[in-house]
Length: 332
Image (cartoon, rainbow, N blue to C red; front, side):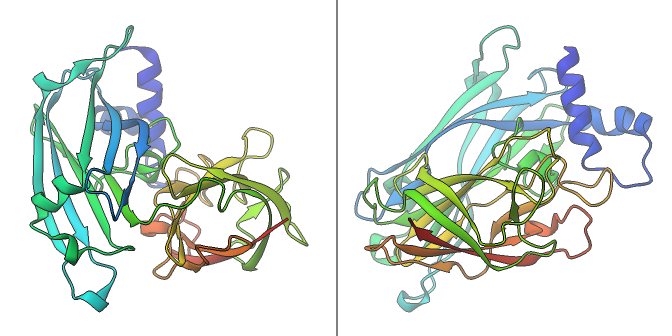
């Protein structure tokens, strides 16, 4: 196996072990069990509520300790989450959507030549798979695509047995094993973009979540640029997290989606590869709160981003588990 993969799997293992583990144990126990489905490209993860042919498209690459030779198959399951109880509860648990065996994956570019494939599903296909009708789906509802990675030695990897450094987006691994598709009404590309004053209205567990390059809070807020993301209603901005490694990191990319009158924080967003309070802890994850921040879909002058630190319990061993943080964005 190539040296760089040994190093990368070792890094992933370091982040998921407890304080009592020794470095040699990482090599013997952790490295050997690494396997991920890397997200290479996200083309769209929103569904237009009025377009049955609206598609979810993602390109992925499988990586394991044998450079893809352990891949058996990947199960793709779909789940529907009803977030609009006014029209009844139509939630659907995980339902098998497809199974992609190893022989149906293509060979990626040299020198690694890892298995690659694409998942492309339309709104109509997911309706059929879940047995739903358009009348049972509304803006703010969500489809979830879940992956089970099965290896030839019988092991299975999914969102329930991976560390934050693995499931976080915008990292080398970017292997969440779960993708959320928001039901939206598309907005104009220029809405919720431009220069905004970003002010903390509820500090996170370690103070202001977003800070300057020296880890210092912004006393009167800071001006940042919000740009369009990979999907019609997805927006993103760049900022440092308060646990970033000073001098060794660039501002991270933070993502949210405009869903009707709410701003929904993206899931599995990593504070920083160094975002922890205890050495060897899994880095802190950020994600959506149970209630999202308010917005006016026709007026992007002011909106609020409500989220949590310690998403899924990954708090970097800082001791707070899951805690809210909120920001107000005012267009300049």
